[in-house]
Amino acid sequence: MTTIHQSIGGYFELELQEGNQFHPDAIGLNSARNALRLILTDRNIKKIYIPFYTCSVILDPIISSGCSYEFYQLDRDFLPDIRFDDMDAGSFFLYTNYFGLCDKQAMEISKVCPNLIVDNSQAFFSRPINDVPTFYSPRKYFGVPDGAYLYPGSIDGIDIQSMQYCHSHARCSHLLKRIDLSPEDGYGDFKDCEKLISSDAVCLMSKLSRRILGGIDYNLISQRRRSNYQTLHKELGFLNELELANIDIADSAPLIYPLLLKNTGFKERLIRDKIYIATYWDNVYQWTASDSWEWYLTDNLIALPIDQRYNESQMKVIIEKVLTFHADDNMEKLSGTNN
Image 1 (spheres, rainbow, N blue to C red):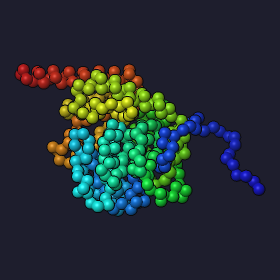
Image 2: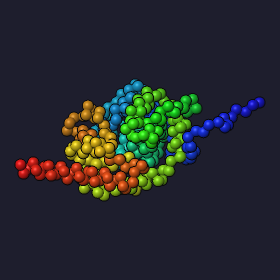
Image 3: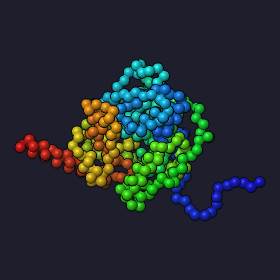
Image 4: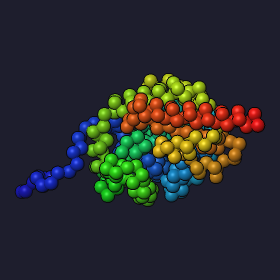
């Protein structure tokens, strides 16, 4: 009998090393929203509480799963402003580990909320809490065309063997253009990839993304993120209204440095200077009142990049820009007062 084997010889593929995954015990899926969808359907969840301060895409798996939802607010410490005793019996509670800085809050909630789900999309390096369903989005931390990790908690009904792999070979143009051309040249392709991911059914992480993630130096990346964060905080912390930014990050590797300033147009000026700042999240304007904490965060938080592509040199550029803008604003205010 002829043995079926992988092809031998022929042209080469990309040189991607097969290494270790940072989350080897998790289920590798194609997107974070599909990880949530899998939790909702497998546990037959009928209602879930979600934060006002979150991305609108979180509603896609909730609505498509036939699950009802109710919003909750956050306090200034990023803890839910809710009494868990008042929640509907059997309902679940989704908490976001904001900016990769809310491990402590997630742990506190887990002690009083029996049906907790943790969204670690912004906290790739945070470890899951025992038996708490937790999902991750590696695309927010690394250049991969698809991918998510899911720790399902006590779920044991997921049939991984019957799931198909995602195929992402046609979704890499934005990743390649960023290297070969520029971020601007690849941005349209990036948006197209996001649209494709939003329409994908639940499937396993592509072999391509798994190979890329297996070749990453996670220790180096976490150290670089911490170092960049600390560099920014040392020079800009005196401006920052966000108490959360003051936490000890020795065991964290944050997504961004969250600089909270009363809206002065800094974000727009940084973007004009090609320092690209994400907004978390425009949909919050439609969901909340203008005097809410969530609205204030959306309007004023500047998500400064600290990722592994950059070092102290780029952080100094950011620091110089922000301090210059701040000084200019003070001069304008002083001039206006004198007039």
